[in-house]
Image 1 (cartoon, rainbow, N blue to C red):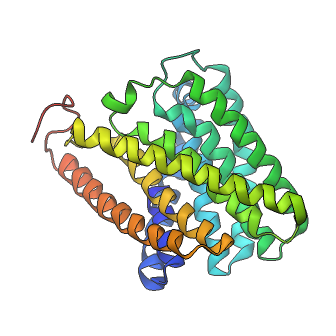
Image 2: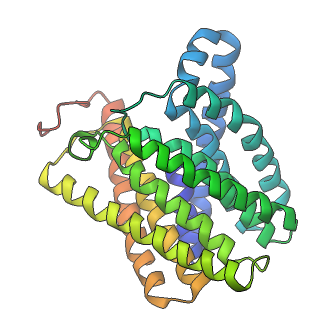
Length: 301
């Protein structure tokens, strides 16, 4: 997810070669994780089931749609459609499993992945529709977009706001889910399927969602400064994705609405995301090499 969305952002800012390198890396990671997903399903159904009912399981859907979106932008619609089909088949199974095991309150930031996965379907479907793969995909994108907003509202009621200060990284998904919603809205705004009042409503909603995503970004960044958590945790990848998604949402909104300063903002936020992506890779490598990780939030290494 994190590597794929940064690849999309680099493409939108004209860094094609670097974008394609990251796309290749994202594909390798996707294949490895997909193989592990299938292997666990075949060899240990109990463990697979236990993992499938938790919100992080929906990263399988979100990651598939992000990679598919990048392939559509690359001009490979057949592969993008194939990935959309895979995501559509997996999405209801995992979504229902996760929702059935939701807690009423006190959940970490991963709870917002129900929105992220659903909006990922909307983004990919809308991207393919814009590429001429069928107007019906635009209608499907609109339906997923609306459902994603409903799921976000439900997830927000269950989110433990204390995670803003104590979370190990996945608290950023609270803002990332709004960012991918804004990205989906910008794709729908750019579509010729909606005109008049419908287009105006989508355009306005895009600005509102992006504004809310940026507000979350500011709050979460301030919390990171006020309460530093300078240690590696696998959930830090759930920080990189919202950073990259917010940048891409700003870039896409700027393009769809012809607001130049949003494109400038998107470029700045993209390089912030790239820097954090690099730092998290360093943390991952350090942890794999045996360095300390998972320490309490106040510890410093």
